[in-house]
Image (cartoon, rainbow, N blue to C red; front, side, top):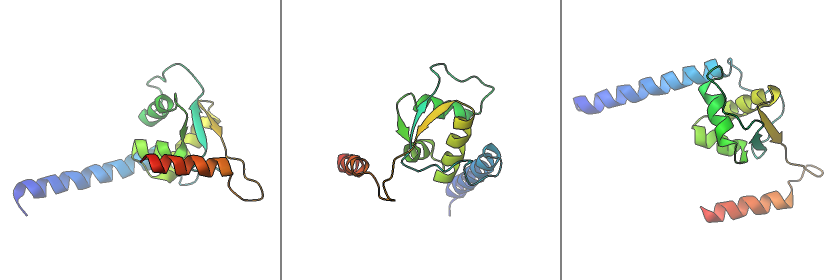
Length: 126
């Protein structure tokens, strides 16, 4: 491995470690949300104002992203964080009144047909 490649590889590993430590700190080490939160649950900002610097960067980004309704899975992908981390953050923000969460309605444990059709339509657009 050349010096430049080795340096780049070490920088990448350090950034990954730093990111994991940050996510651990942001979630308080929790891996499960306070409340059950489906990955397809829809999230919208509960405030029209931008969150100030008293909130974490992740909270501020989620609040901005959710000016347009987004699923928990989308938030996870857009933030480049694991789904579990996104669930914890969104649940905490809901508890603080910063976002509104709209859980999917399931009849007898079966997913909503409309939801499945929307997912299929979204996949086709990819």
